Image (cartoon, rainbow, N blue to C red; front, top):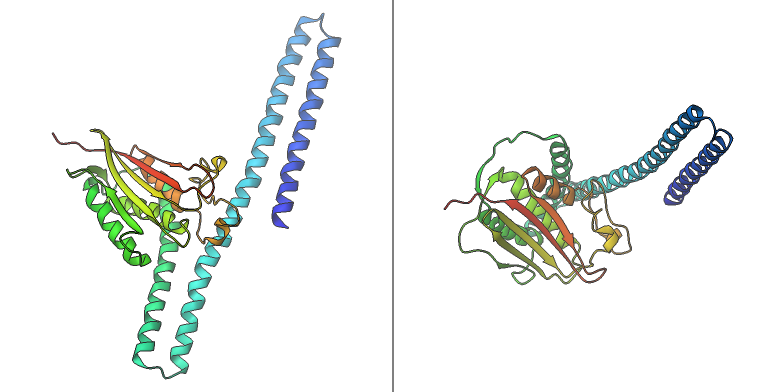
Length: 301
């Protein structure tokens, strides 16, 4: 119902804008016809109607963008609410069970483990929201230093396997240069970017995961981290949108994946802040995806 209302609203504003532009053009043509022998009124009329048409077009575009932005904000709020509510409800349930029943030690330890996982999920959601806000307004290079990017990729790769309980074959390194790769930046932000990229690949890989991580140095001035998965893929018209804040592709497969729509936005924001960029490639739906981060490299001869 909500999507239908928004679609109708967008269609209404587009139709209204087109009608107003058409009416303005008609009036402009009529003005030219009636005043074609009078130079001053003719020129002034053309300028005035031109500005009026441009204003109507800009106003229509602005209204449509605002409607879509509000839709993204609503989707974000729904996603964050779910991401917060689900682990809180789970923790509460296990705490009530522990308080009301006498359980053996093995069962208690299992409950503690599940609750710790739920708190990790809560903390991850909060950190995503905070990091997105920080990056949107960040401009200063705080705590920047020369960082061994190769080590960060290895650390995050190992941590992600443990966190998601994945085997070496499911998430593996496809290769990296023999020499250490150094970049200038904040170690925590770089870890966040790499983790979000791996986490995104895992989420959208389905039940059978086959993710390959490659660290490349195409030239002495840059380093490229490439993450390839054989998951659900990305439609071509979504490739440029998936890095937008709050944006989540909408289809039957992605709707089953929970998230805030901030992970890839954070990845690109960090990469661009460091003078690099992030991009995505995919042959299409059901054919996997490849995500790439390119960063400037600190090269010591």
